[in-house]
Image 1: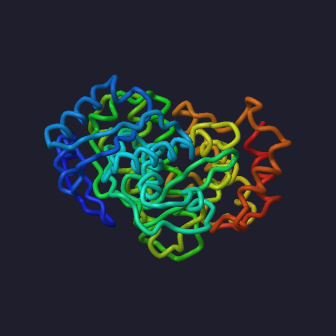
Image 2: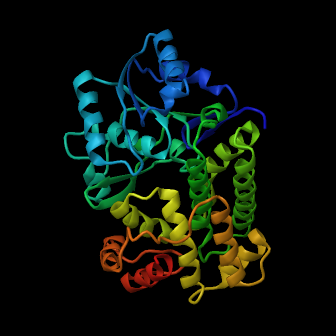
Image 3: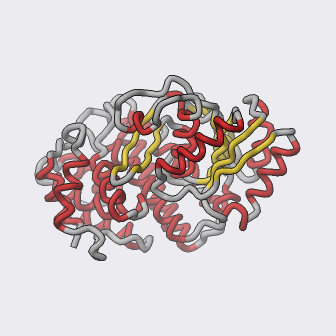
Length: 380
């Protein structure tokens, strides 16, 4: 696949090998002079990306400050640390180098840096940000699509919540396959599951949308091919580029046009599970989605039958659910929780938290008792 640029909902996306070289000029284009560089642990230093980033910032006379240590399932405390740096150093641009957790944290920091209140209010649906610092992204983990959408997820204590704002949409996103070559196989697999589920969450609805459905079904087949290909050839830059593009399309908002959002039950339930046991997001989704399919198929089978026919070439719901499990398991991602990290005694709390703002689901509405039944299927 050749390099290309596309502007999507305000984000300039640069996809292709070597596109990282544009980063310094892009920060400068958006008038960044004092940058907060947000990233995870030490991986970007080990693979040389950090050095490239810092070199470009210095070459463009841009001062930078580091916020490292963002963890999967990002937490409010780290965001507050970043906000304090921004206010103290008068940061004027946020640069996220990493995957969804880093980008989600950067979005919260961008809003909180210009806010006198707590950013957790955004996630509790108490108020919305009125402005935010400009944000750019160098993506290292294809998965969430957070690099060009308005959404962000954050954890605080035993709650994991999502929110969104147009102010959180990044100004640019660099999707360079070179920056994904050192990804561990489990993170690659979790990313594939995540993008697969983002497509499914928007696919399962009750509207008449043959165009959107056809695009989603083709994209799902592509993700299956990419996921299996990366298992065999993890250093294939064509596969890596395709995974970056798939992850971006999956949650760009394009697939949800005309369908009132989609379902999102699997995500809502997974958020409450990972708030308890800190499981990787993709790993949690691989557990919940097949269980969700099994449960809701008894209430509304039509779209699941279509999903099985056009994505997996299956002629029954049972064989479709097995095909989903087999795909996830082929990536070495378990489809059940069996380690006792979630207990039956946790089910009521998970269901209560998932429905804190009302019933969930756009394909089938789920109440607390429905969620408990899904958990019984998923957790052994």
